[in-house]
Image 1: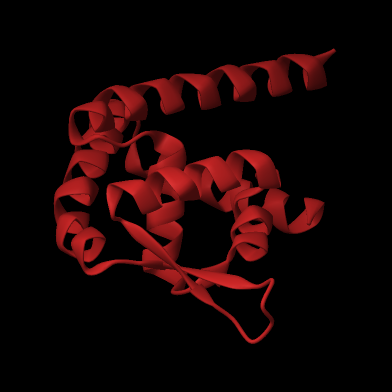
Image 2: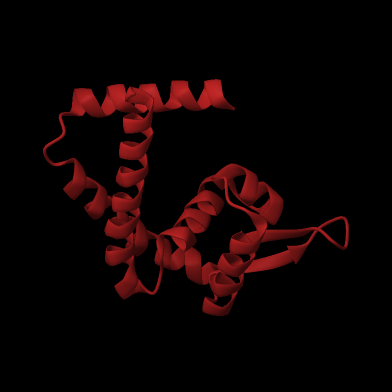
Length: 137
């Protein structure tokens, strides 16, 4: 059945991409899960933990651990919201200063992975992924 092979291959590809990114970010003291949070906060601004979980499709316990690590590293801070239970997660000045270095490493990994993948195919894959996500969500 093609659906099983499709999803198996997507899962394997996702794991491979995560591993490659982790290898590249490790010398900088980050992992892909932390990068995902940093990138999202840079792109979308201050978010609650729930909003981060929803956007990144991550359960609350691993998100809590990731945020706690980033707080200890000095890359994010939690700011109280309107409600005492609600905390907004924001990038610190240190993270904003380090961001260009991190994004440079991530872009190098991405470019390396795409070296032999034609640009037209990249664009088509992006369109397919976006279309599929919109249908699922």
